[in-house]
Amino acid sequence: MWDLSSRKFRVAGLAAASATLVVIPPASAGASAGGSSGPQAYPVPVGGQAVLDSVVAPTADDAWAGGFTLGTNGFSPLMLHWDGSGWATVNVPDTTRIDELSSTGAGDLWAMTDDQPLRWNGAKWVAVPLATVPDMNQGGTLVADGPHDAWYVGGASDPNTGSSSSLVEEWNGQAWTILALPAPLAGGGLVDVAAQGPDDVWVDGLTSTGVVLLAHWNGRSWTEVPAPATGFAYTNLSELMIVQPDDVWLAGWGETTDESGADRDSLMMHWNGSTWALSPTPAGNGELYDMTEAAGGPWAVGDTYHEPGVPYYAYALRWTGANWAEVTVPATQEDSFDGVAAIPGGGVWVVGATTNDADVDPTVAPLLLRYPTD
Image 1 (cartoon, rainbow, N blue to C red):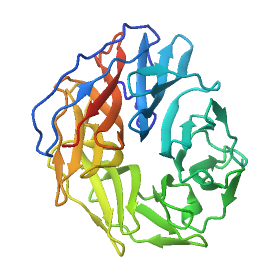
Image 2 (cartoon, one colour; image 1 turned 135 degrees about the horizontal axis):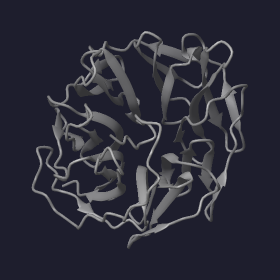
Image 3 (cartoon, helix red, strand yellow; image 1 turned 60 degrees about the vertical axis):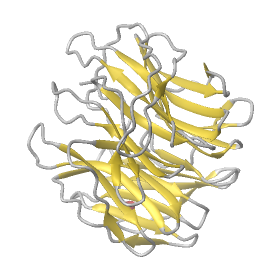
Image 4 (cartoon, helix red, strand yellow; image 1 turned 180 degrees about the vertical axis):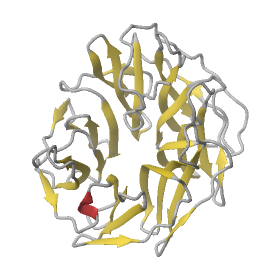
């Protein structure tokens, strides 16, 4: 299988052969269990093979989607912009994949690539170099938190000892600064960050034994907060999202056993202001990769992949206020939803990819859909 989101690559080598862009015709599915009607697919102005990994929507007429194209020379960055009437490509500095987009409004827009952060200055995308440490890893995660605040989580690996360490940086409007981390946060297991003001920041990760690690920054110091046991033999954490100080979500997935081809079930945790607890999701396979706070409540997206050669589909959940319910997705096999973003005024954008999952000459094309939130 081609696992094409940067957060979930499963194969190192990808076919370089070009493919014709697959454009899914507009469709409207019936009402879902989550109370939302089906999606409308949009043409993607890209030829050849491509994946969309992330999407943000500062306004109804201003949205961005990022990912990468695949060619004979490997990955090239792909950035798209929505102006209210259509999607068009936008140039970015020389880099590889665009892994993640984050925005708090039209004047605050960031992109995280495999090797550096990018920021939109109102006219073009520019590189904003991180503070560096020896043996710093490429990539990482980034969240915007206003025009003068942003946060980054990454790490470093010592090639001589094999040891790893986590790295948290804050942008103050001028430069990135490295924050000191207490143990065990410094131990190399942090994977994501969410912020709602410089004194309300969460990070998550996994310890060396696979235990979920959660910690909060209050503007002065870090506090580790106990996390519930997931019950999985293997746990993967994907997205951390703050709605309010007493309403925080963590999405991911886990494998039920250590055996090859084990079922992969969705994972959701919730912070109510005092404790973290598991939030049950519908039974069945489902990996979750991204979340957004939409009109009516949070959405989470992913796919149902769990074993090579077994058909899988896109996967989406919506919080009803009482429970998580599945949302209607296209019936196309080998679809994956990798990113989701609420649209101001209503609706959500969803991006991802569809592939033929072939062992020989696999092909992949981007997905770009819009759901109403009725």
